[in-house]
Length: 455
Picture 1 (cartoon, rainbow, N blue to C red):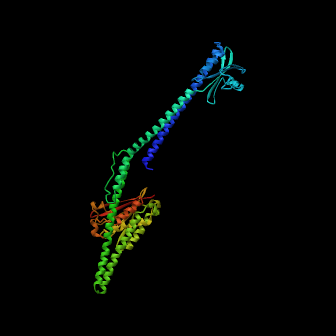
Picture 2: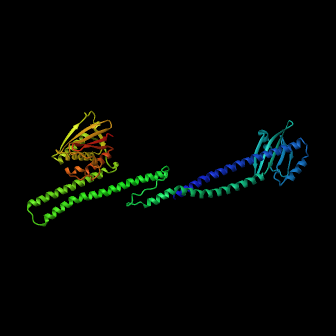
């Protein structure tokens, strides 16, 4: 069922329920009023006949004649008068006797002063009447035909009004639901036009104040992210294709030249060395891509545990020197460590080591003497790592982009790489809810500062 139909049904059902409740309250209220009014009329008629009989001394036969003449009229109350000893003093129609009084009923009336009850379709009232020091019991019974006729008419009117009202409410609900959801329908039509080739299209945000506008704003924000993601993906595919093609082309060219004619052993050896160098570049590139993929995992898929930064950096220091014997890395502890918690963070040791190695290798590569300094510090909430070199530095323009994958700045002429390392390091640090910043003065050197939260 569509939302439009759901709104129509719910709104119609809700208003119909209120109408039904309102109708029932009206009917119940008027039915109670009719009952009370008719009991009052019976009581008044009973007392009037008692006064005519006891005070005015009207002949009982005259009163009975009046009753017989009143039959088939709206007011045909049957009245009976007894003394408290259950002796009948007067009855409108003894041969009919609608109420059929009993001694128990008379005693009940004497005890309770007045009783009201139904006998079939008749309303009956019994009262204890005081007259000149004597007690009399009077009963009066009748069928309120006119009152019931009014109730039936009211019932018919309420039912008809309810049915007509429900029908009108249903169509009104359809109209208002259609009007209320029209912006959503317009959004659906617009969304159907959006494909991977035109992600620049956006939804109309309307007045920007209601829930539909809020939905449009949120959806447009999602489209912005998707568009950036698609653009980044296209750029990534283009860059990775170029990075893979370059060493593969070099290897293929080298091998083709080698196969053209017979060469001496020295030439073959040099060709093999060049091919190995290109293969190593491919291995480094593939390893970097694997690490980049791991850094983009959902953090729930990566195991985290307590990691000491000093031990982590010593491992990274050892691996960097093993891979690059000509590099020199100085380790500095800026503060005394009184508690290991001060330099402990929650993270994945492998990924953090990859990030630190990339930053350290980057610092050494761009230093003339292939030397950098790694400093360890801390504050109440984070562990702090600084990697400082005395290299060529990074221009302000390049500092805005150095963390983008495959980006190479102006200083790339001093050292060759695949442009993944800094992007990978930043993603890993952010995966650990940390930050990495860069400060550089061209010609003097660069400092990368990493903050990693303890918890």
